[in-house]
Image (tube, rainbow, N blue to C red; front, side, top):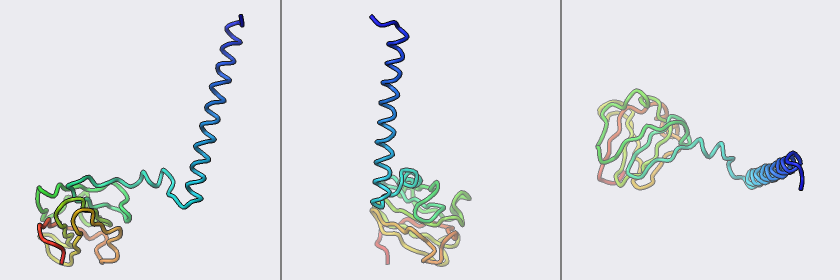
Length: 144
């Protein structure tokens, strides 16, 4: 029978070998994903999904940053809260209603409509509304 120290050392060596194999496997998978054009895990986790039934306004383009979320059935917002007011850069609409983003309070000024059930705008700069989000109107009608 082997002394306890010898058995313990063998056990530690086996555990370290398993850990090294696991690290190599993860590194290999990450390298393959990057080589194939997939976004690294860190970039994927930077995006926060918009839950079903909600409209989400993100402070960064491409749905980056902590979104401000609004349950569509709760209705429109005449003046967005300071957390997202004049800071919105992208929008997702996961509700069954359309969502209009306005540049001014009380649903006035320029606006853009985000279609229902998965509609999104990844960059509000194309609508001259980047960092100019002031109100949100939730509608039952179509965009147009």
